[in-house]
Length: 346
Image 1 (cartoon, rainbow, N blue to C red):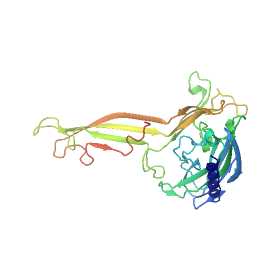
Image 2 (spheres, rainbow, N blue to C red; image 1 turned 135 degrees about the vertical axis):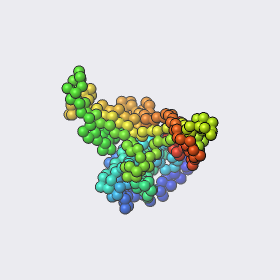
Image 3 (spheres, rainbow, N blue to C red; image 1 turned 120 degrees about the horizontal axis):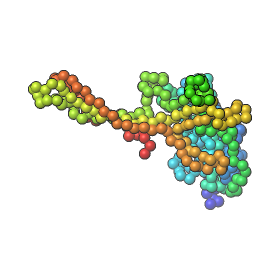
């Protein structure tokens, strides 16, 4: 075991010689911080379970989407037992977090609270961060990758207080990431009988476009359609030829869809008092993230899933008699978009 640790330490030292503290290219410039220290931090020390913060601040020079992930040297992305786990943040450890629809001049921030697991005890492990940038056509550019901190993880277990809600963005907080309610929809007391409270509702949805030619030419990827034609490319006559009156065909249409993010905010809610603002917004949110108990060391208590839906409908068409009839002569009996079968959670 001592030999293994020496080899691991030598690998770490070689690896760290390639590190940088900031990155810049034609699309962005940015910096990464570990516990408010600009990276790379070479002398970080943690105990098992001790929380630490890693934050990336990215200033956009052009209209690009930014994705990032944190990982550890020596542990593959698909390893079940990782040396760190995320207590709070935009993604789980080794998983990708992505920010969409930001424009040049804006600043994008990613922030995680992580802590070492028992897998890390007694090791010195580089905690790494990687970035990828996409233009509006989903073309991928440059992948800055470097170590945020070289962390010595002691065998002792951390026994201090768990981090509070203000230490990092809360995935259920509608104000995180610049989300705003704008004016919402307001109802006065006189507008709703027997209601003695003003209501300001805000709704945010992702994606919020339905057609390929909208929202900067983005393609719709959250809807799959299957079209099944029952009676072939020409349909069938209602009565036997040659005296039939009309040509008939019918279709079965299967639809699958997903709304990646859906949030409803009651900004005037009076149920949750706040000593500064008078009250806090009541929020209903559906997206993909793990739910943790902030009062019990952020243990996992469940998972939130995006809204998914599927339904089957049908239609029919009747046309005058003729040799062409009515049907799907080009696509065949079964026409399916490439997304069908790949959207709903298995």
